[in-house]
Image 1 (cartoon, rainbow, N blue to C red):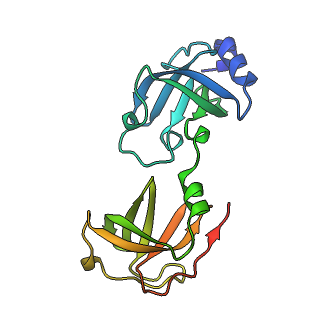
Image 2: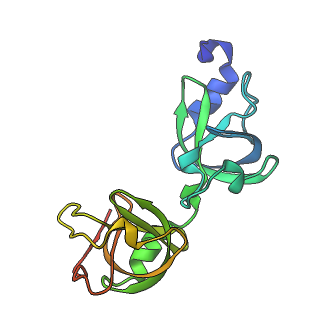
Image 3: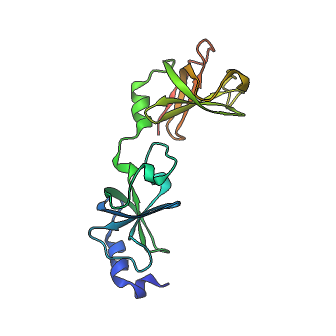
Length: 194
């Protein structure tokens, strides 16, 4: 479809937007691949239930199992415009960009070597993922990862178990938190800024 000629009002609307514009609207439909938003100031879309579209990674900083854990149909939302999808004639939006990043806040208030109580969320071949609360999940590696020594073996942990961990490193660019067990001499970590 040639959006420029078939839907000139829609095309003109998309061309008028600038990255960082805050747009408001109503959640029109929730799909397994994202959320359609009927924008207050936008035209209707000839094919989709809204001109605005939020891909799943842009819904929230926090992990979620289903988009309905974050938004509901007919809910009012304000989002940042992050770009135009000219193939589908949609305004790509971000809901999470208007919220503070919990990883940055965690890095700002955490000292390397600081102990936390957390819950074992998942045991995988490379280590255990520990939920520290507030949307922060870190990895305690079982084997050396990027020069970080191993902590324990998989058999030592069960999902749901409460354990004490120490923050070894926070990598803001890759959004990773590395943890160690107390007494493992991995406490000389750093925060790597964005």
